[in-house]
Amino acid sequence: MTERNYSKLVTDALREDLGPGDVTTELCIPDDIEVEAAVRARMRLVVSGTGPFREVFRQVDPDVECRILRRDGEEAQTGDVVANLRGSCASLLSAERTALNFLQHLSGVATLTRAFVNAIGAGGPGLLDTRKTTPGLRNLEKDAVRHGGGLNHRRALFDGILIKDNHITAAGGVRQALSRALAGAPVGMKVEIEVDNLDQLQEALEGGADIVLLDNMDPDALRRAVAAAESFYAPAPRKVLLEASGGVTLETVKAIAATGVDYVSTGALTHSAPAADLGLDFLPRGVY
View (tube, rainbow, N blue to C red):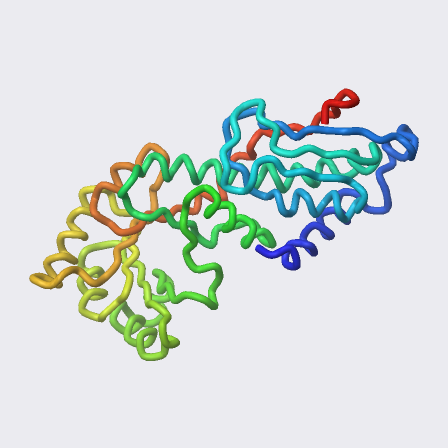
């Protein structure tokens, strides 16, 4: 996400937290005090969100010096310094919470994503996110998924076709929904459809879907679905891509990944990631 895109997010976040002023800091801290600070990881984590983190300090006080020591996508161990800061004590105090909110949340998304990627293992299916994101933060959260080693599904409703169960019901069935989508799809845009049983899968295969999302199927059902798709195209290679979704946790993802699907998707990457533990502490003089 470009600085242009997240600058307004930072402005809105500061307006929400800082408002007309930081009353506590204004009363307690003289304007002329300069400090140095370090942001340290308090757990093993994957860094994400350094852009908006830096932008918070820039908007509060352009004279604050911010050095990023761990780039987005890099791991930090407990105790590692992720960033150093130098500038007005009042500015650092006023910006601290908003800056850490971005860094902790987005690093949490990247860290959880990395845990899923590691659980799948090398050579396994790709790990996809979903649209289950925090309103206003989607692009940053999807960037964080990539920093953790995951892949982005469609970013929004306008850049990908995914026919879900309610579309199927409203359209009158799998065949009807799929034929309309394929007839009107923009050039180069894949058509994906969600199914929850093998009969629907057969309809999707016969209808020419590019991607089929296998929803809430256990590993045995997923293996049968993969076998059915292989058989449909035999003796030619399978053309349709298969995505498993639903019931995907750190405990289940390895078994799901081993069924032969091409992708595994889970909304947990963005809607259930715990904030990463990072802290900002002032340093003794000369330590920066």
